[in-house]
Length: 257
Ligand SMILES: CC(C)(COP(=O)(O)OP(=O)(O)OC[C@H]1O[C@@H](n2cnc3c(N)ncnc32)[C@H](O)[C@@H]1OP(=O)(O)O)[C@@H](O)C(=O)NCCC(=O)NCCS
Image 1 (cartoon, rainbow, N blue to C red):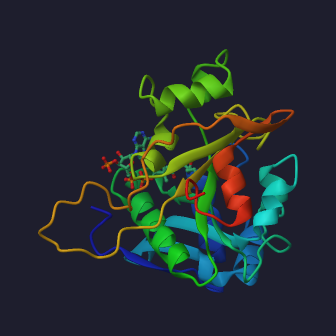
Image 2 (cartoon, rainbow, N blue to C red; image 1 turned 45 degrees about the horizontal axis):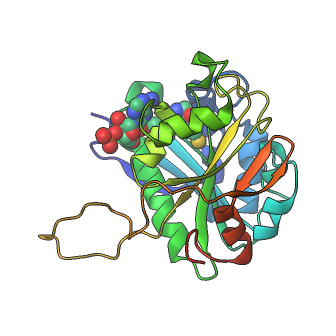
Image 3 (tube, rainbow, N blue to C red; image 1 turned 180 degrees about the vertical axis):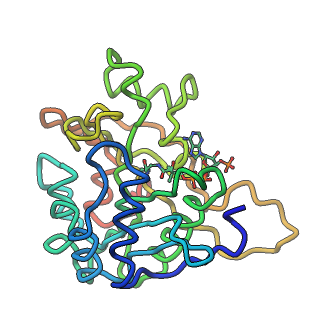
């Protein structure tokens, strides 16, 4: 299986062409990053670009950048504005307090073999290990949304959170301990599966290494896997910010005050 002999390593300039091919194999429609965009990401933040390969074949790619928390104040929040149109050139800040998971993908022939999970786990651990990082988050894709086009985004996300429905891509993250912070219409208009919307998630700090014999209910710390929504404190058009996002802006982990 693809998981055998899998190597996770940072991407190199010579990977750019292969990564662009992998992107177009992995992402629907026009969501794949191009050679030019991947090269720009590597120039902006090589340490945040990770690949999974086996037998010299690229099977997965995860991309991250560090951003300043104030960038979340820039409305409307869109994928293009928060990633500098997928390049990171103007958005990555070397001292940024937020480690942003921008994308993860695994080759369709190798899905279900924990390649995506291993890449995200590595990024989460890495992000939290960096001095000055106070949160690890990402905008993910509610990819099942096109199957329920009449359901408002708020209801769609809530029903995923209360377990009455399951969105596959949200589930990839929330089943591993990520919590939903907010959701955004018109976030990425060309993401047709998600009807253009994005969901902001946060990965709590991983548990420190513990006694291997001890039960490990979650690989993450004592954060709940679902947040109880505090009242919405600010809305702006299609964007809804619950209080935890304001915690992030103040430099606190969600729920820590
Ligand atoms: C999302 C994606 C990266 C998952 O990659 P993957 O390598 O197949 O995922 P993994 O094998 O690591 O799965 C980890 C867990 O998530 C679950 N999962 C992954 N994709 C799932 C799906 N579409 N539906 C249901 N569960 C899914 C797996 O069953 C697994 O569960 P387990 O821990 O109980 O075994 C992959 O489907 C992909 O590249 N999608 C296109 C790009 C994309 O949308 N990326 C995510 C948004 S940034």
